[in-house]
Image (tube, rainbow, N blue to C red):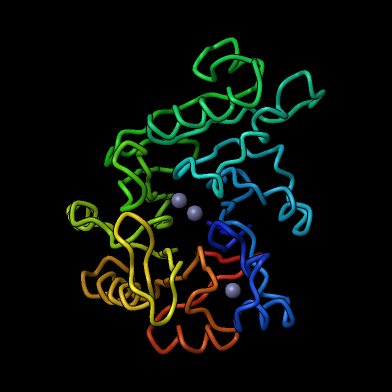
Length: 287
Ligand SMILES: [Zn+2]
Ligand SMILES: [Zn+2]
Ligand SMILES: [Zn+2]
């Protein structure tokens, strides 16, 4: 399984466009791995997680053809993870040709919110309408939490995130292919006990954990929101102590904001002391 990060920032991008805090000033000056787009990843050239607002600019930089993506797992519909224009531009009105049909999988609440966001932007009709799906070349899959779905070569399980309101149906995803397993864990605050129980009960053995670290060093996690560094490190230890992470498994932080952040090289040194890594835009991992 090949995983490439298209973006690793929290919602405002990192550095923040309108901020002159010490971190944003350093990040802007240093450039490179310190410049982060909104979070999204691509797996094996055919599976995307989140139709975020920056996936086009990432795809241009990393020479990725998004028209061959056939599956999108949508964690949730917050604007830093879903840009409705990406779906709208698939309509014949835009003259787009020969894109692969796209299966969009997420919780029913996520799909319904995406539908409402699209309908505010155009009058093509509901994406739940088969005629509209045909025009856009999309199919929808409403995912029930904790139920595994075989999608192409992947066994995909959505689990509830500790993020947003209960009505928003935010998911984290476990993605298995052959003997490999990825756990994509953003956006979330402290992971719910039912998710830990599920991972243990299904004897999950993970090769790669990608986890929310929106609030960095010295910042507390916020319930229903995001993780801070202290709880992130507790999660690193818990994934290892529970035997959920394979011996050579790795944990990468993503969805990084400016609070409690360090220049990338320094942040990576800090992270290694606690047994994890800091992701950056364009990073490609193979598991
Ligand atoms: Zn987010
Ligand atoms: Zn700042
Ligand atoms: Zn969010």
